[in-house]
Image 1 (tube, rainbow, N blue to C red):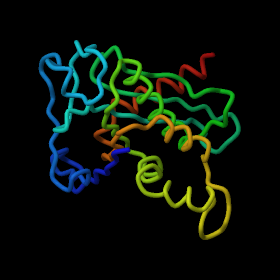
Image 2: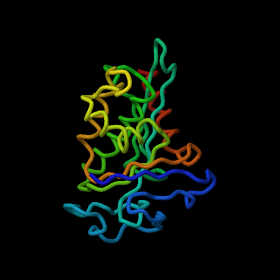
Image 3: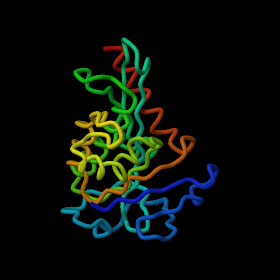
Image 4: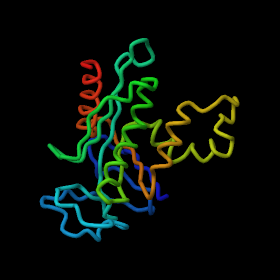
Length: 205
């Protein structure tokens, strides 16, 4: 599993993010045309990339994820997820969180990443850079999960079970050479709008 973290030095510029994946600065390239070569994406089994994407310098498709929850932590909470590949992109996702599970914002953040990975794998792609404004999800997957596993999925300081253990286990099962990154919220507004629409669709059911 290839993982990395981007951290914002300057909220006003994506260029101010630095990349720890290979220890060097990395700028994404916004494609103005369709992606011309499938071999840009390692392990791509067949070419289905007749759509515009943003890609990083390793050739990974970039997408943005977000989760939203109304009445978070209260009775009647309702959560939704959003995955954004581009304006009016057919792969964009907006949907409610499964109503059979507890509705929380953190859970929605994790499941947004899960849905993003499932979407790109459905299209025969196995490398994607996921950008999220959730510290909990990004640090959970890139930093904390290794300690959690060593401790039997319990907090080292208290011995209490890890919150969202099953969600993180599911996300880890989906991950294969995925780079989870962090960006400021103002650069995640499109995915946030999709997640909020997912919440609203649950209210309408």
